[in-house]
Length: 346
Image (cartoon, rainbow, N blue to C red; front, side, top):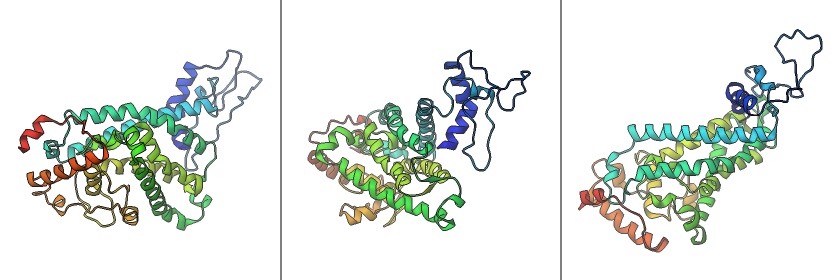
């Protein structure tokens, strides 16, 4: 994240902070790379050292014109919060929209358990939660850029070339295990209605439901991603790539396109089972931990048939079992379903 912060500072934040919180008029510095007519050179207390081992962009004089230099912790926290919020929103909205347009089966919206104005509600919930999730995540980014984790710059700084490959499956297995435990814990009766129920509002989710969480719920399930570099070495560029992948995967398992008929991969079909029947398939990437925890439910084979997965018979079976489980887990079902979808299946 330090390279992302550095680029943001160079192209955006330096100018913003120089304007909003300028240095006192008495602070006149000789900026590196800028010719001065003065014989006396006064260097600023902050010195630019690039976080990027491959290439760097020299900062403009605006980097030295704010009372808060780039290494100021308050400035770093504010900028990291904005990066997380804005970049997270763009990532969510762009990929969810692409998934909705090109992948999502629109017939899902005719399902009897599809909610009235559901997509609008999903997007609204996600937008409300994102700034809070960004604020809760910011301390972890601060720990990274201030050197309090085991992130490293290049392969030469890590355990070895072998680790440059193995860190990917290691990350997946570790985070999948912890997410399973956290997700299952969020289904505990004392926790579920307060934190996780907002995400289970969507019985038949669209890609826009991927980030439609209670903010503490979404943040809690992201904790393993931040714990990993605190405990194990991780290439910092890999860290950014995995952050993007995690968000992309979260959208994919909500897209309703049941491609992965796999005993190992926890794809969209497995996650649809979770939204329909609540107490199964808590894993994020694999079915391993659900199998070990006796919470795995194999998706109905008909879900992988284009002719059968959206059939009226399939929907009636789903609704019958889902309504029974909702009463056990939540009590009275307070969702407002789309009357148009209900009519189409009667």
